[in-house]
Length: 191
Image (cartoon, rainbow, N blue to C red; front, side):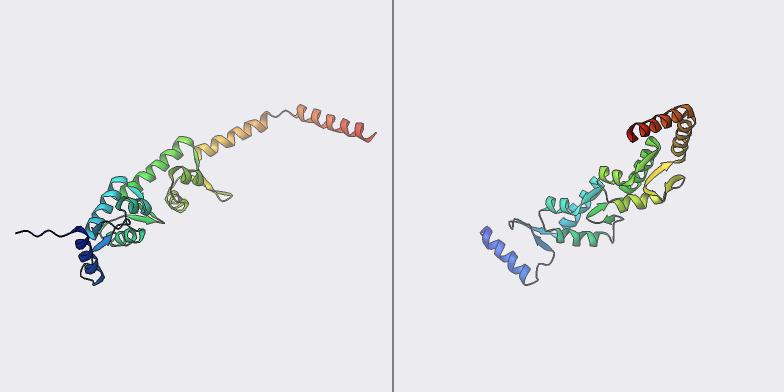
């Protein structure tokens, strides 16, 4: 004959088991109503990271309704078997990292030049991550005066030629007229 146990009595048994150390692989949800097996927590984190490619610890904590500390601890364990990159509070898959390199390179080729700060803000990624990815690229121009900007050599040459053409097309006649007008103003204001 089955015996029914009151839900609150069952919760008390579980809590006693946790306090006495008999149930070690269990964590309580933030609302206090449920207990999650750490294996379930690890599987859910793994599934979410692989699905999204990029996810932060806060989002994982919200999905599981557990403390961020629990998620951080689970990620540390999963890093032993997963090839993820963890930067600040972001967890990134190798596929995301490869795609990131391709996206940035396509963006550079498309526009000729990009700002790492602007790209970091647009992609919602840490500056240090994008800087390290971009530093691994070869064949692009990065000037020490503006280290945040990376450009293609074609873009730089195009800019140089536009500047040269603008300077060469400047007519000396116009410049001398401007000089005469300025000197006339000096005479007018001195009197």
